[in-house]
Image (cartoon, rainbow, N blue to C red; front, side, top):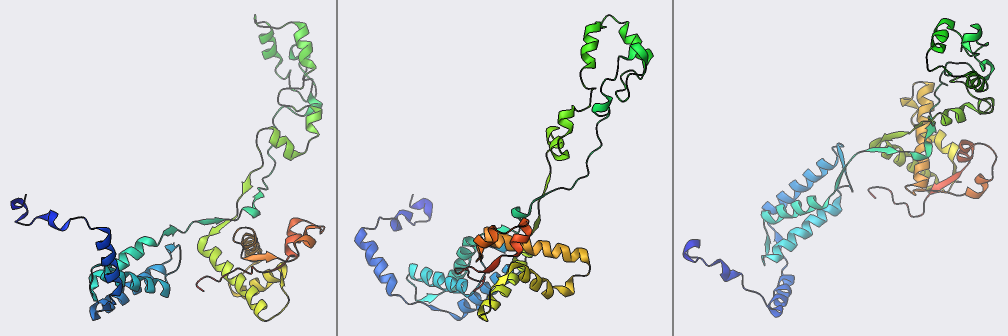
Length: 323
């Protein structure tokens, strides 16, 4: 084995260390105060710049931003690697390894759409045409073979010749069966009891529940609106002024964005989007608290009116991003 490895015995450096030896090694390593070489300093600056540039690309957003804290982490990792090898100088290879370890610890997530569930609304689809065959008024439809008219709206005897041909076939039913058919609504027609229901219930009974339209936006757009909204709330709090009513906050936000809004439709869309973001900041992100929740709950009016009347403020535990 020694000859096969060029005269070196690889097992020579693989002996087991006793607990006392390991403790002595750790105590000695802790006494080392390694210093960066000039080359290592330049490499550290280069790696930090690369991490910062990658964080600002926007195609993906890191789970947390690259700040001075990550630079300090890279420095501490480089020092630890030098101590691990019992060296008093931090080499470029240790800085490279520190950057690799730091990048592995940063989880990148794809910027997906933000679903604003609290603002799901049913589609306002037009009512579909009623199925052919008329309503309950055309009920009897008659026995086409007896007269050819077949009633006012049922259309049962519209084609007398065809019906007579069917009556002559061996599968013709008896007179009693035809009389029972007359007592039933025409095929495709609703019974009077069902026809009195609302259109929404009729659609649901037909197996077509109302569809829902989800309001979504890109993560970057949500973050931008959220930061601007929180900026307005915090500015008022810093000035010691009374808390915003939500409707006033929305108006203040839209006034800031007035230069980017060119039509009434865009204004209505922008208002809906910022209201949806505020709702998510209250219910999901917990960046905003409602100060008069009980009072608003007891108010009359629809949900939108109650939300607009809410008095809101930044959550006491809210920490601005990148703070």
